[in-house]
Image (tube, rainbow, N blue to C red):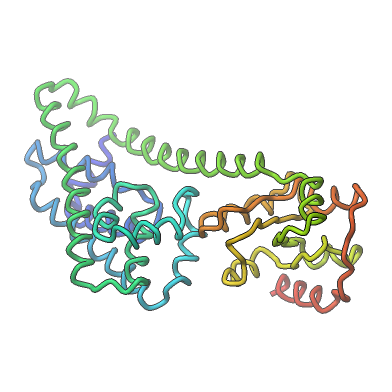
Length: 326
């Protein structure tokens, strides 16, 4: 099943260009196997290594330029969207901005080699007002190193196969299955890392007793009630001083969330799933002191801790119902 070889031989540089372009625009479609395969085919004189390099470099520069000008035009709004789509929980906008502020050129050069940073670096550069000329220079250097390194690695592999015809036949026969396995492994690794990060958030849950001590001591804590408006109808109460926001509304009001204090999220779902997922989004946006409340609202109420009554929630329910029906 020589699927990658057959497709590359049939569509050649166009496929290589489009594949790299799509990946660099943000779709989770790994281009590494295709670049490696193109390098290996160049050893058999089936593809030209310089032309493959130019196709991959052009695709990377075009995609990065698009994100650069989108970041310049829409700023933090597009960065927030990228954080939601990202499968990399350990790369957040704040980390990218901090790195870019102190080492602009170096950040752009290494971005392709850091998972998640490749898509975030160009819009961050645009948002921070970097001139287009220096951006293209440093991004071009990083893209050339990335594309050239992968093609060179594939070429070395292809040269090794030429010296072993039996291995070459075996790889050609099973290359399709190897590509599929590689793509599946790519997604599995990212999802595993995301799952492990969510588990860390669950393990870092704040105990209700600890939150009660903080409030009694007068510590400034930003508490967010993530319950659905319908859940407030039978129990129109929140934790003391809590702000009621749905996860969607919270994402739209990031500028109101303080960064200099603990942020406590609570809900009523099993294992604090909504709070943990919302904490993940906030963490990727640079909020470090985020903790889900263990047991959420139900555990706080069971312990008999104080609650604040809230105004009638009927308008909130009507808005929620109308949005759901739409």
